[in-house]
Length: 634
Image (tube, rainbow, N blue to C red; front, top):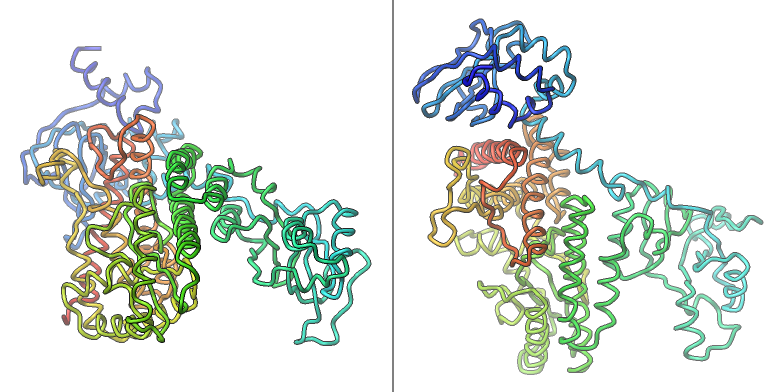
């Protein structure tokens, strides 16, 4: 090969799909390439004209347009275009213009056709449109993890062993020993069907109502330790506040249920009836136990200092999940459960120190923890709902001390103080339920810049301790009022447009100009946060009470308020940007650095840069649609 062809060969082999070709094939391609230069603003392709080459960008940037003139995509070095026209009628499908001075490699159509027909990976790549390429990248991660794809039913090894609630603890211990099980499903008369009460000889449920569960741990702690007689009815010691999963749920959902509720056994239901019980030992086959063990360790600690000692284990758990190809939802949910566990244990310790609360209360998690989207870099956003009998003169001192104990305990455990003061230590965010309802009503009815910021934080809320049912009342209030307030939705939409994606970084890889991080991209501020904000607006508009962004997106898709295909695109974009951010944080921990949200574009792989571009384009298009849908009249 000539020196010129060798240079072309070396450059092509750096990029997909050419890096999948054998060297001799790629050398043949390089020898057929012609090179052209286009000045910024020059039209490269016009819609409908004949096309006879595949276009590869050697340097510069190119914009593709739809036939109506709308921007379709922005491409940079290493990208290809024109393939759809070559595959369909040999006519240009997307007009192209040089965004800046650009050098193009022309690969003749016969060469392209030969590569397409003989090389499967090349063909697979060029057949996939940009958004589908992003979906493929996301799907590969999802499919790689058994936690995400394995249903709970795969872990059921036998039918549940059951006892009627009229049995005694001696009966329970005997049956557990005979059946070699660590739990029993307790059944009783289903009052809705009084004629259905038969328990089959095989020991399986036959038209019975599950009323509780007993584990070997219950027998130790609730019978043996307090010295109860063996004829004690099991109804007196069984757990009745049941946490269950469906047999079609995924293993990771069962794991998260165990994490969130700190339980080791879960009844599995099919059409509301128990078909088995899975235990912690069953989960071990699918998960390293790391996150489960961290939660268990949290509840065994007896001081803030002991809780602080777990920080290394929390980080190790985060890194391990990343290295085992968990997706962003699994990681975010597990980290949120760990965060809730810290709060719950600190509240237990606070009540031990201060005594029982004088009136009922609910401790709130806000923001990413409430959405089950927490990562390793986080601060503490929390608040307190107090019973409406709250009397400041009688109760203020207790709850101020409780909030301070929890907040000061979270800080050394990795949950830094909120610089905006969104903490229960702030009197404004430690109020009776009636006041919280007034807050939310006023924020929706009379939006201001300050209250819109509050809405973006407080409308992602979850109860972690106490009267958690109050949270459901607030969620219902938010959903009912927001859906009928066009002014509020328009204001939230405008607010959600304040942060835009860093599309410029595909040209010069420098997008931040704040002094400290002038050669970085903040993936939270410029990626996940604006995505979460716009998803929240759509969710409020359809009356969704979901908190997780993926769940909200499901509600939005079901309500059909987005153009066809936009919902799945948003899901893929959120997943991919989140995972780049997560991997960056995990790598920082492994390298002994303090994790953050700031990535250096030059250190990203070509695969990540290409798919981040697709994801940011999805975000950009979604923001345009958000503005169109909600702000036209506002």
